[in-house]
Image (tube, rainbow, N blue to C red):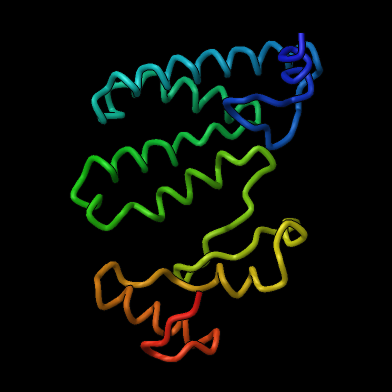
Length: 170
């Protein structure tokens, strides 16, 4: 059916191929095995009570399979997000982990990549998906997660549109 054709073409709803290195028949079988293992790992994670270590055996199996096939299954991003949301770091919002997970799971590949300064850049080959000001917007680092940090950011942002402090526009 349609899902078999999608797998044969190297597509999966659970993992995305970096490139297809296998013959079509082997690729179909490999992608089906990876999809089944990913489904089993995801089910295990949902029952793990926020402890991804309980599913380590499946994680290692999926990691090995996906690396051998050149497929990205977002394993590290999934585990990092789960660990962040289950820890004290959750108070900081886990924004970096969330963005990493979102970008890893995009069907067409990552659209934003993290830069060393903490901001983001439009991924190579993805500029056409964004307006001309996107690069300036994503390269900014997020405001400090405090009332003062968000207020300062909002004031500077409003000023960039010519809105004076205390002025309201709708």
